[in-house]
Amino acid sequence: MWGHILDRAGILTPETRRAYTAQRRAVRRFAPAEYAAARLLLPARLQPDAVVLVSFMHETDDRIDRGPRADREEALRQWRHLVEEALDGGRPALPVLRTLAHAVARHPALRDRVKAFLDGAELEVSWDRFASETDLERYIEGYSLPALMLSMSLLSPATEPASTRFEDGCLALISAMQRLDFLEDIAEDAEEGRVGVPTSALDRYGLVIRNGRLSEPRPGAFKALVTDQTDRAARSLTAARHLVDLAAHPDRPFLRAFLRVQHLRLTAVRKAGPTLMTHPCGPSRLHSCAVLLQESTRRRRETPPATLSSVGTPPS
Image (cartoon, rainbow, N blue to C red; front, side):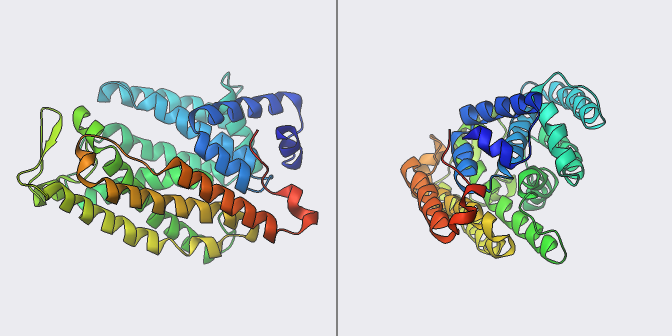
């Protein structure tokens, strides 16, 4: 199955195929849901490079997300050097960088996307708290959006004004996703002293962090915060609805599923409410799998038999 996908994508040399296969195995291990979505719903021509970009983002996060701030900044500096060397024609030892360089050669616009992502990573290594909504929005636009656009740019329309509208939709989408991320993980983040919900929002409801735990001044204060933040996320998801219509028809099942899963996350966070103060949450795996299967079935029903082999295949 995977060999056929590589054939369809024009990845033919044995060494390059081995490097792409190594990234496929890595992504299947650390991001099984994302892997399944890509394999089921993305066109075959995009699957290998989408897998590589997910692997590259994961490798970057893994390198810059540990230790004191100075250590994270140095890790980013060293990683940027390795990435730039690989994209400038070097011979990187790491398969993830060999395949990244190959993906950039196949999609030249990715070079600017990689640079924007690494530039934005400086925000990721330096933040501890966001004082206001403005600070959070600056982080989302500077880091979260470039991270999302690494892979979403493969689905973006090639011409204006559709490409700008697509990126605007992606900004709305990642705004919702990032807000939900910070709510889902707020208990763990409080332990680490790195809460992503803006301090201005916590102050509005009288919430404070004491000894690594959130404390509310009165019953219902945290629930009110969750309502406020999820209402904002819901508005952002509504603003992202047009993404599906802007994409090419073969790319729409993936985008539909992606958006539907974010709505499942929104529902799960709202349902969790005050329990988020002590426990993380996420969408039901059963419901998420149902979305993928429904969209896969719809794609196969709507795709002419002669072109079905050029789109997604069951994961392997």
